[in-house]
Amino acid sequence: MEKMTSRIIALLTDFGEKDYFVAALKGVILSINQEVEIVDISHEVDSYNRVEAAFILKAAAPYFPPGTIFLAIVDPGVGSNRKIILIKGRRNFFLGPDNGILIPAAEEEGIDEVREIRAEKYFLPSSSRTFEGRDKMAPVAAWLSRGISPEELGEVAVSWEKLVFPKAYLKAFEIRGEIIHVDKFGNLVTNIEASDFLSWFKGKEDLKLIIIWRNKRKKLRYVPTYSSGVFGQLLILEGSSGFLEIALKEASAANSLRLKVGDKITIKCLK
Image (cartoon, rainbow, N blue to C red; front, side, top):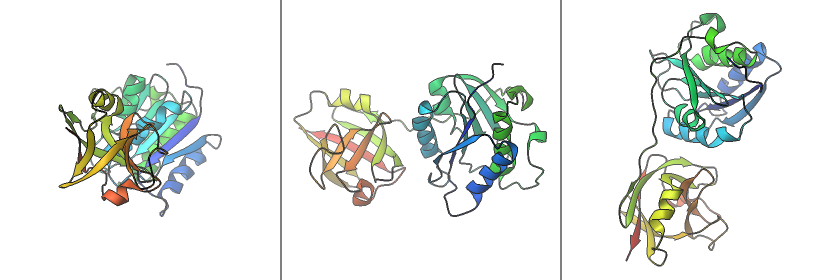
């Protein structure tokens, strides 16, 4: 199998920054390969939120150099019988629990093969079943960065868990979707693909646009950038990830509307 040349490990977790968890991952990796570069994608994924983790990984992965090893650990099933998998994509490696979080990013670049990680000689000699990210996944990522062949880590998997982003439903004058991510600025990333919205909105530019949630409603203005509109105005625009976003000019739409990941919304055009 052709070897990847880049030696970057990019981390994505829901561990936060308070505890020792992220530092322990990095310590394990650096103990095995002091030459590897570790990049933090985020450690602030909502706890156990696989959809948000998958979105962030998919949004970030295309901008890394070929050969990057993505280690993504958002793992409600830690200690269970769920597998640990390694995906060899067309450009990069994706390593983590078999719960779907790796799949959207890997599928976007193309999947060459998926392996179930079973080679215990590359794990830490720990009996812990509550921190497999440290004891199994981090050392495997580190050994992979040193050039260990994927064939040495496990057999080709015959199946793995898929994750598909929640589907947005488009009707003549409304779109039903949900929030899949809230960024640091309080912008609400939806599961509505921007291209779908623009096709739906074509010819409706002169109609009144509103958002409806929990029996509340508010006017929206479609704009090309965050700087458009006036202070405090609720905006709808195409985000950099290709999904539709709800924003509040120079303020937090999440705080103002009290919306969070998983909440349902409806975008409507009124005649």
